Image (cartoon, rainbow over all chains, first blue to last red; front, side):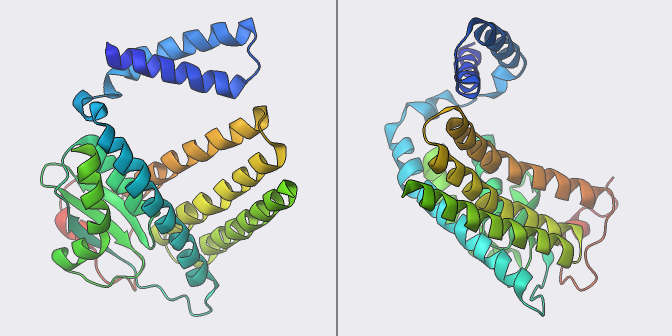
Length: 165
Length: 111
C-alpha cells in the first residue's frame, strides 16, 4: 500500500512538471492517470523498503556511483565515435559470460544498465538464479568468465553492493 | 553568454548523433548496431536536450527537456537489452567474424 502511495505522489509530480501550467483539467486528469498507474504497477515499485532508510546509501549513490557512471558514459561515446570513424572498423565482437554476486532486482537492473552504457559492452541476458550475465562485447579482450568479470563488472559491483544490498 | 554555451552543447550533441547514425550504417550486425545506437544516443541526445534547457531557461520546455533526459537515460539501455535478447532468441546469428558466443553455447536446444 505504501509503495502504491509513493508511486502515486511521484507520478503526479512528474505529470505536474510535464503539464507545467496548473489548470483544473490537467490536474484532474493527472490524478486519475496517477491512480491508474499506481494501482497497476504500484506493488513492483518498492520491494526492499529497508534500503530506503539509510542516508549513507544516498550518499554513495550521488557521490560515488553517479560521477563514475557519467564518466564511463562519456568514454563510451568517444569509444563508439572512434570505432565508427576509423577506416578499418576496429571491432572484434562476441558474447561473453560474466558472473555477479548481486542478487536483488534493483541492483541487477542498475548493473545491467550501467554495463550497457559503458564502453563497448551491451547486456544481452541475465540468469538471475545462478548470477550470470551475458554481455555482447564489441572488442573481446578475454573469453573466460573470470577475466571478463574482472574487466567488465567489478568497477560497478562494489559500489552497487554498498548502495542496494 | 548562456545561449552560446547552450548552442555549443546542441552542436556537440548533433555531432555525436551523426556518429551514432554512421555506426548504424557501417557496423555489421544487429548487436554491434545496437551498441552504436544506445551509446551515441545517451551523450548525443542528452546533450541536445541539456543545450535546449540552457537556451530556454527555467520554463515549461526547459523542465520537459530535463525530464526527457532522465527518461532517456533510464529507458534506452532497457530497450537495447530487450531488442538484443529478442534478436538472439529468435535465431539471428552474430557477425561471421565474431570471436565467441557463450550465450548460444549455454542456451543450445532451449526454446
